[in-house]
Amino acid sequence: MKVVATTRKEQGSGASRRLRRAGQVPGIVYGGKVDPSAVSIEHNPLYHALRVEAFHSSILDMELDGKNERVLLRDVQWHPYKPLVMHIDFQRVAADEKITIRVPLHFVNQEVSPAVKLSAAIIGHVVNDIEVSCLPGDLPSFIEVDLANLEVGKTLHVRDLQFPQGVAPVLHAGENPVIVTVTVPGAAEEEPAPAAAAAPAPAAKK
Image (cartoon, rainbow, N blue to C red; front, side, top):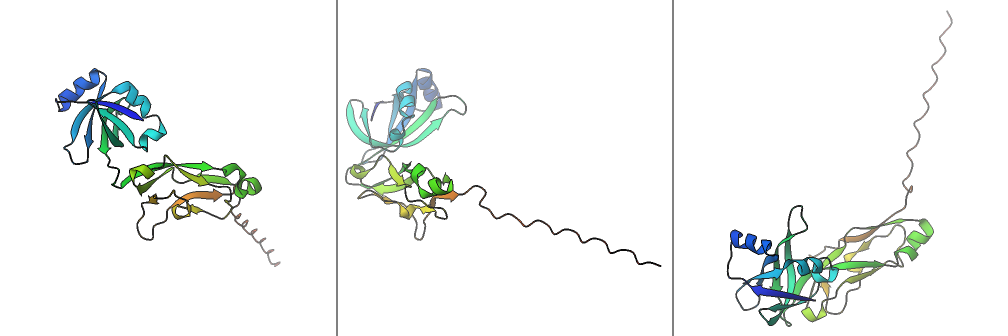
């Protein structure tokens, strides 16, 4: 995916407001062996690009003042209640340097899993993306989560997933977050009904 940007010389809140009124989004491109570049990007094409999942987790081709660079989207600031992009950050990437980025999870075969077919279970997606580390050339657009063998009583963790070659999840030692849970409606044990109150003893005859 491609982004067209122009270097902006004026900076500050006043200059940013003028850019936005002109249909531009102020941003910055940092990283690499050069100084950060303050840039402006046309709002509407950027707004529509941000609605595409791959734009958030792919290496992007940026044309900056006619020169091509490879970048990652790093941060987006939105207007509190309007569909307006207020500011955007990109990071330059080098082919020989590893990157860390969150990529989406795509869940497949949920409807044919034993948990759903045999037990009518409800599958809960605890997370919908995951942080990975890899070289730019190995970056996947998504990680597939195959639920075909998911059974009742099982949970799926990050370390259970199959990652493409050269791609590894970013986890601390001993960390293994839950990805998927399985719940069977009505499976919780019913609480025993309270015991009937004992009938009062008959009054003694006088």
